[in-house]
Amino acid sequence: MDQRTRTILAILEKEYGHLKPGLSFTNPFQLLIAVILSAQCTDVRVNQVTARLFAKYRTPEDFAALEQPQLEEEIRECGLFRNKAKNIKEACAILVEKYGGQVPSTREELMSLPGVGRKSANVILSQAFGQPALAVDTHVFRVSHRLGLARGKTPLATERELQQVIPRSQWSQAHLWLIWHGRRVCRAQRPRCGECSLQEYCPTGGEGA
Image 1 (cartoon, one colour):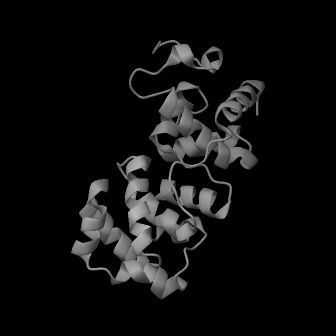
Image 2: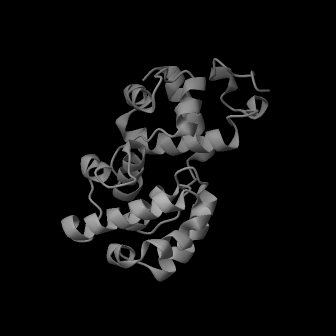
């Protein structure tokens, strides 16, 4: 890791190291459901829905037993609710039948569940199981490219590049730091470059000021 990258990570850690993941959960299963619901939906909205949802239904068996229309109504506020309800029911059925009601802890097994892609699997591995993983969502993609930490044209290429320049021990934390920086400062529209503590290290710094 070069000195510039080391400095960027140190600044991000100082600003965002105290912040927790945006999704609320108490176990791997709750995070799995929240991650499926989070597609094209804000964490704030997902947390509102899951707070109500998990008070009624607690296990994969509970969700698998729900009728599809009933689950759709429960999660309607999250958008794409029909597809998400289908994925949740199918994923829960697989958890019950194949994994004894437990969420698996490998990327391959997680990605075999409906509604779980590589990014979602990485989030679950990192946040629920404490495994080094670097999920690339739109914020991580945007911020890492603006900072010149990655140039890959796809999330997977960007993930591979970030894994090369960021120490494995910091993958999970760096993922969160980049997300929070993307939400608060390095926004997609009208980035707040004038308020950015990374501006002097950013090749695109000042363009949105």
